[in-house]
Length: 450
View 1 (cartoon, one colour):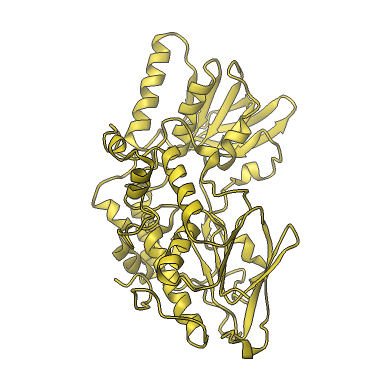
View 2 (cartoon, rainbow, N blue to C red):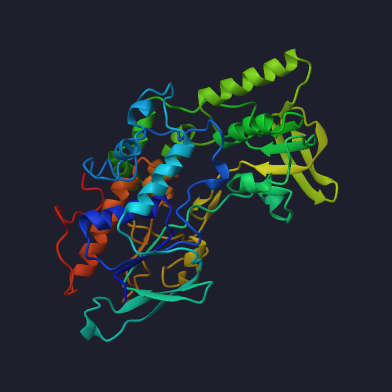
């Protein structure tokens, strides 16, 4: 019986692992990861791409800048600190940050089982209370390999579910794939490929993929389909960027639903349907030079609604309608790459009611057709009030709808979120557990302690 079972071992739960080591080292914690190792964004480690995030907002620094696991110390131990500080770049390369994350995962004191894909999570009666379990029921986790794990609580961090627009949902074809499968989806194409590829979307990922395709397949033709008139600059004003401050979590969480919607509408350009100036400028210059050379390789289908998508032996046919003129056209491509973002928790718009891993617990968690998952300030799920003995269940990195843009796949608040989760787990489990010691150098506080 573990104190905590953590599903997923990406950046969100790696930050939790550091917090356990530094705050509650005697907790009995098991991490389960479906991948064979601690990999991050393997399908989007593109040449020249960066993390779009201040590197000091890493897995631990905002919580404990003296930790061994800071990005700065990683660079120091790798002998690259001064060279990195000399880079003519605002943000670190995505490839280097992926190596930092792997380095932390390999060095933090953690009990992790790789190649364990979780297929079921259930609530079961706890063993005899004489064992000091402290909760009436426990969590039972089953994996595809047939392993069964039991814990007094669980932290779920599976990553967000890719958003597949309805027009593509019925297109079950390897020719159509989300950017979360980008590199595997083009792995069979050689450098001399001369076909046509479509990129759907106008986000940072969309621009990065278009640039990568142009460099990777010089003879190919790229069609970028988007609903807007063109690419928009991401709002990187330092005033807007304060949405990634811990204080904003408190402000957003306690806002009304109407207030939250207003904030989402106002602040969307800080993270969505927009791209950084460096990649937009690079693509515009690339397209201009191609036109100058008489070999236009990238074409933009702006202001287009995709009304149909059909995959066949010859490729993927897209039906497009221009929003302003109503003009219709068909485009047939070899692959359609969906840079269409990810789902949030909710019941309207691009959402899902709860993480798929928790679907078997929908009733216990009070999730219905008109009620999404309810998450507390400390990232703990609020269960159905009529049910007793539901063990602590936390969701890590999935709570943008309740906690704001700091939970939108950003590194900004990982370290502080892990602190909130570990402190709350300690407070809940240690109240009746005989074997739980005080947190190291910390007094349990709700939320971020701000």
